Length: 338
Image 1 (tube, one colour):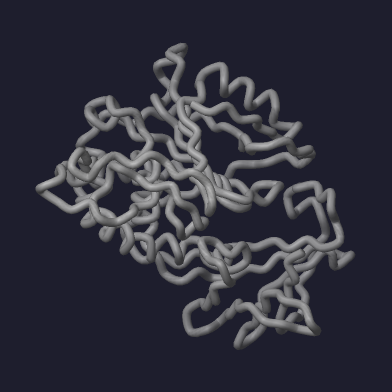
Image 2: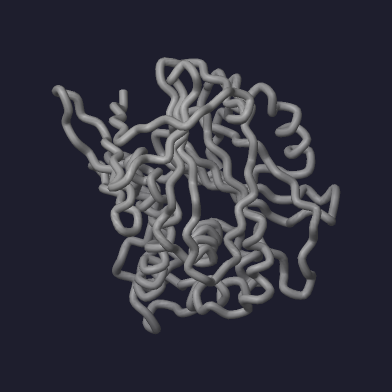
């Protein structure tokens, strides 16, 4: 495994050290981007799809399935463990991932070479790329008015909006699919029911329990490329999960507890790892992980918040209630990405 230098928020260093006492880094996957050496590809005749459990001759391997979805960031990290049919199936599930990401996909140009227009149901909010006064940026408008609160100094705005309807458990399946593409072969061998849950919608009652324990945080720096990390239990405490998966893209980190072997049942001791950001960064902010529940199979509309901070290079990521905010009457926002 290639060696990397990581930075962590100063206030979270002890937390990270405690976590790494129980877990070790088992894998770091940083997919190549353009003009970089791609991951090795096995010959098609030697490929086996871990999701449908079919080999070459039983199914086709002509596509280039991404390990980390290009929906999150353009990359060239391809998997040898996914056939064409499964790639197509997961591509359909990614429609729910798109709606789960919501406005973030437009603001951070996730997986796009150009800004993707975002529209909520009935065009309540539209975010799109425009040029204004010779400056390129993103304009956010509403057919009524934007639900915005602002700090007294008007340097801090929080926009609240409704996502488009999405199915949370499909988002969870996509996260597991990404992790499974890099999990050890023994884990894959002994967790066939989990692969059937991800690919064929089986064993829902059991595995949806784990979907209640997904954690998300906003990163204090914006990442140039996505990456994933897999942590394995060092064996000092068998009440802890065997593996934990973290996914990083742009300004987001998602953390997933990898499900246990079906017979063992759900354990409740859930450790969390503050973000470990590749590269050397001075990070003063305290980062907090938020629990999100992705267990529902029903179409869900989620109320999300997006925070914009201006003229404040060294912002302290405090909870919003430590400042005084009030509602402001704004018809549109124009954001110029520097």
